[in-house]
Image (spheres, protein in one colour):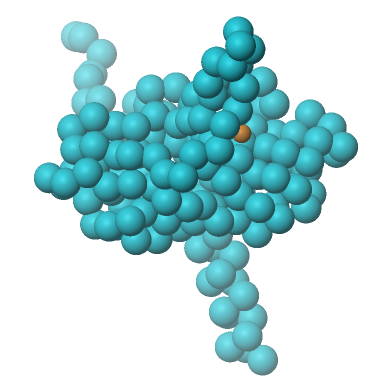
Amino acid sequence: MKRAIFLALAIAVAGLGSGALAADMKSGAIVVSDIWARASVTPAMKTGAAFAVLANQGAEMDRLVAAESPVAERVELHTHAMDGGVMRMRHVEAIEVHPGTPTVLQPGGLHVMFIGLRAPLKEGSTIPLTLVFEKAGRIDVTTDVLAPGAMGKGPQTPMPGMGHGMGHKPAG
Ligand SMILES: [Cu+2]
């Protein structure tokens, strides 16, 4: 009984930790950062998208070949392409990640597409997502859900340190 409660607590704390810290997630040579999704505008919206920065610290090109999440019936890799003067989404088999040049998944470009959302994506929540790379394998990432019109997390979202480590003292 006690043990079960302790375990539940440990899981709750671990969950909080991963959501609050949102640290970069790494497997092999691949580092995933700035991962986020857009909140659903209405519950009727059955699709959604997630974005991230994929960096390759190795010497060989790797490829994102799949994405998985329990939030949707299907998860696909998409890009945007001009089609007769209209910007349309297109399914892609894989997304290349070259050494030295991060691949950026962002609105209007490459993205992870959720098709058949089981529930609306709520702003402020997090959703589990697994990115599958050809060489680096599977990387589980915690995806922050931002506002419906969000364009990204910004270049860096450092921990709010509240002046800690600044070390400056008032003069005199
Ligand atoms: Cu799409």
